[in-house]
Amino acid sequence: MSTATFTDRVYEHIFNLLLRRDLRPGDVLDRKRIAEDLNVSLIPVSDAVQRLAHEGFLATRRRQGTFVCSPSIEDVRGQIILREALECQAARLYCDEVIRKDEKRLLTLAKAADKAADSGKQISTEDFNFHLALVELSGCDALADCFKRMIRLSMFHEMALIIPVQQSTYDRHVPLLTALCEASNDEAAARIRHHIWVGKDALMGAAS
Image (cartoon, rainbow, N blue to C red; front, side):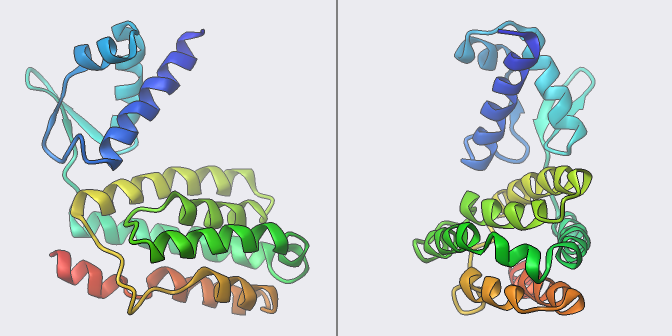
């Protein structure tokens, strides 16, 4: 197994610890323990930590160690604004005929996202999978790659701040998909913008 593969394995392990809140904001990351748990050397651990620090999950302080970042409400708001820019641009590219060609697969993903929310899941990979599939329909690899990085950091921010799903304001994915299949470019972008922001101001206000 290559060093890069070991690094990817360590990266995913630490990321999952963050999402499960086994590592919480302000916690010190024990690199030696991570290496022992995964039976790898410190080299891929250091490489993964460097990558996670660059992406905003961790911070290394000289002579103090590596800590889990503590996101603020403004960090969350900034990621939502970035998500709006990415998804609305993608919607302008994939709307109408493009989205209808993949409607069956998207409907399966939309139902899974709604089911996850109904079950009370706060951070949903099902939601991520649905929106990533939409963004990938844009045909722009750079946009999709940026979206993947953004949504992972958003998932961490929301879990770190315990921002709960509110069923009273939750915008369901199946009706969203139905609307997108009939929307023009501008209508698709507007519908996605509404979906992204619905309930978010109230949630962030409750967390502040």
